[in-house]
Image (tube, rainbow, N blue to C red):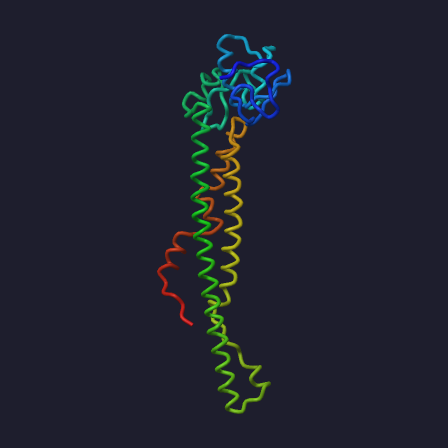
Length: 255
């Protein structure tokens, strides 16, 4: 690491890692650092009991990292994430009775764990979207085929009746052929389109959270994973896998 001097900070560059600022955090003295870099500095400095700005050495506190890094109950730096309560815990929280039986992860492990789950869920939803789009395309093809068959059948019927010298009024009064399946297919296509829109919105949220996940947003990751869980998606489009498999087994429509 390059030695830090008071006058060496370049605009947009973290003085600790010497790279572009990521999640920039400002100390009270006005210097900017990557949040992760400053967090590591604060953790090391906390052991000696003296926390100061890495650049100008002016005193600062753990609160420089933001409220998400400080336990509001004990005013100490958080070090664990409780999966059951979805709360950030400090060393004093860990010994409280309400958390003794809970599963807790270090902040670093929790961030890695939830980022992987968010990305995995995003990939799964993208696969679901692709299957829905394929299902929609085949439904539209079936709709087009059935419409052609109906139009062709009606045209033949009219031609036969005209050959029997039926009047135009009599022809117009005849019921048009329209299979019941044809009546419901536009609704099915609309349902699929709506499901694609809803799943695409979830993918955007999942990818954004995975990219921006930090201590402050960690507790929201579980909520988003719950909203995008398979049992919740069943409401958006029931039995997607079964519908896709059934359609793939169907023979192609013939004109």
